[in-house]
Image (tube, rainbow, N blue to C red; front, side, top):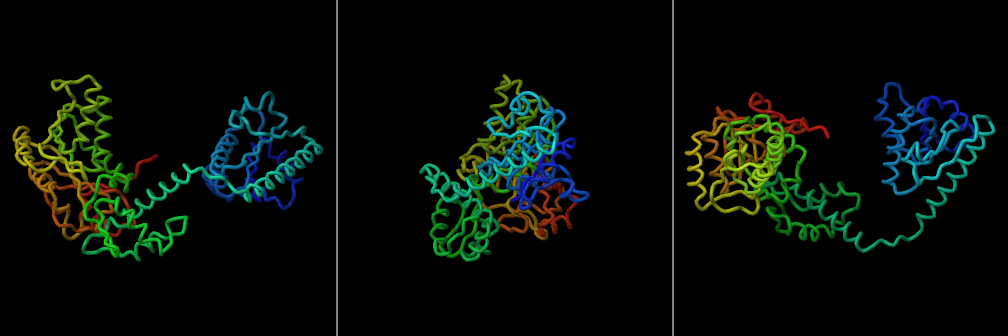
Length: 448
């Protein structure tokens, strides 16, 4: 049994005196005995408490202002207690803590504590005996609970099943993402990649049936019972794949938008994050006079809503929105087709210029360039790239090494730049950086 002893430096001698009366079988963790020279204190203590200990005994004394470290360790232990769902935090009140312990340390409210009666050998021995007896009772109780059958509510069973299926879908999509018709992944290969990613063992016999059920809800994934590959990315899943990387890319992209510019913003999940940033900048009055060419009704609604909330109309709005005509594609939420080409040309002729364009790419290769799917959105991306002063192609590193049907640009084109998230482990990304590093901005993960 491993027990962490949280205490202030002024109580170290008293705590060591108590420890001397504890059973030798109890492995106690004291900083002066267990902390490795040069270890980062905060990270080490938090990790030890949350991952290595069976219990934490917190010795509380004086005021909380003089026990900053003890308070930190107490909160880490309480977090751990929630996750293990059993008694984990064991408070010991020292004689120097005057008044109500629950008022001085509200964190332990509703938690039973024991007291050290005095700073004498009789007090230390008595406290150690009570600690030993209480821990023995807790261990017996925990063992007893382990053997009791638990009645699990039906709602929890359903929730757990749904949670498992959602996680399964996400992992399948993430693995299949890099596979296209020319390089499909087999069911056996997918099983081998997935089997070590779940705490629950996946049955090989049941795997094809489970995969069949899940793929029925994964739009854009081809599955014939033998192989899988991605036919087209879908907005339903894109936002959840590499979300942190896409947020970082959007943040870097936002730094290239200035007041008074005409800006094209593509549809897609990365662009959704960029729109959120623009909304915040409009709300804080740090961005105005924008002419935004958007091809997503969802993006247009977000910008319009924030401008309306500020009490603006078409004459004093910080952002004027231009939407080409057409129909909305359900899988990407982009406006395409019908009279979309003509209306896009009308917008371009009206504005006369586009200062900066942000275009989402679906593939990139160090030798052959930047790619997208061959669909109705292709014309818009190509036409915007032709008439924009500067084009930023945005994509996360999972797209590196993927070659698709339609080429958007070469990395060497005059007005082309790219924004990609940083990932030193991605060899395909490193190849692109080696050849065109001066044309690429790396987006580092944002601090949480």
